[in-house]
Image (cartoon, rainbow over all chains, first blue to last red; front, top):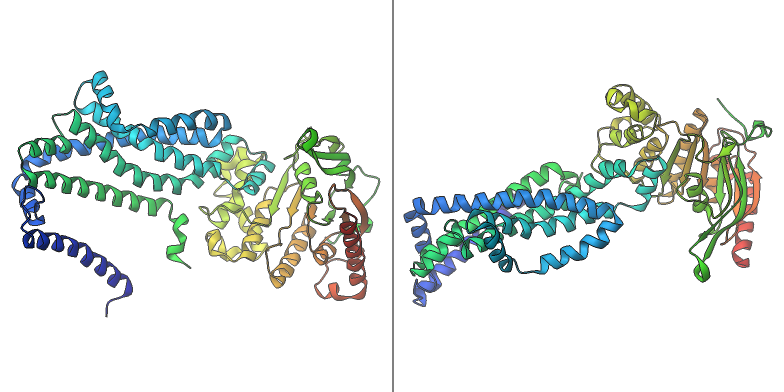
Length: 256
Length: 275
């Protein structure tokens, strides 16, 4: 007999495989041209065939994404701490941030290109600005929602604002922070690929542009697969770190 | 050592004294008076319970004592001088234990030593030595020593409140302020914790201000009970509780004890009707 946990995992794996099988069978049954929708087997074949060519593009995208993401985390975390701990900063910076994040990121790529030229820098910057907002909001929320009783306990000890931030606010914001990291890292991919598509001669986004202009649709889909795989692996990586660092916040999974 | 309320000398300057202190929230037409000018003096080492209908300003008095709130009128004195002039150590505990879920019970209990002077100066040097032993000794006294490495959420509500009491006492506060600390616990756990708190108090010279809704709790624990009126609050009656220490749960069922509670209850019911 399989244990319930194993059975659950097996069921979800089977379902995922099932989706691909359905895709394959449907394409064959309805005679869909690979110019419209290539079959998964064709995509995998393209992946294998063009692997040496795809690899540098994937590395470039991973590089711009992670660099942009790192900057985004640094800026987002500091802004979040500032906004979460100061009323004035909250009132001024919050509307500004909402405004900036409402701008479609595709629209800012040309500005970055104007400033820094096409290539790596706009991709990094686009990845950065796209992932700042969720981090700021989550960190600020975590810090600003310290229970009033706990704050009273701390203040009755004559704790300074820095004491409270360091001992209570920041640790308390960590689960929110990690939740936002998982969202942000996938968003960072969107940012850098968008920038690469518009203005770059390297990266998966650029590769897909070129492939589609030469009607190499399986290669376009191979690009999508690569992006999806990169996104999933980074998401998983942060989930693992999250469980290590803020496992206390997920205690319901390991009930005593 | 055992202490008795009747032995407390009335001549010495009280540890904390409220002199016609009033509190008003808001301004203008929206101003709400939370506390009408109230005077209360608490001797060092005393145990005073504040009882009264909800919203009568009991918690406001605690916040004033902890300097979390400034009085709108009147003065508060600590050790004979304006509050804030002399260093004062305060321990506080609320109905929710507010233990930090990312720290073990021991680390939670040690938190004030990291914050409160003069301990904070020595935090780095003593955190794994003297301070740790201090926390463990306190945890042992409340029967939690086996749980020092556990996290708060792994403990029952009663145990969490025991740890909460330890955190409020670890830095040897002059003043222990308790705001309905046992309000969320079941009757049996609550009675157990009364015993624990009584023992902790009898062991040291901490002065306690306890806010509670539970009249039995007030009469079991306190030397003095102050009954407050409905909002805006003032102290209606201030009476000594004469029973010997250490008190037991059985004592709370004796006629003398019941009479005290009945009288308190009458006062509060009357004040509610008047409001």
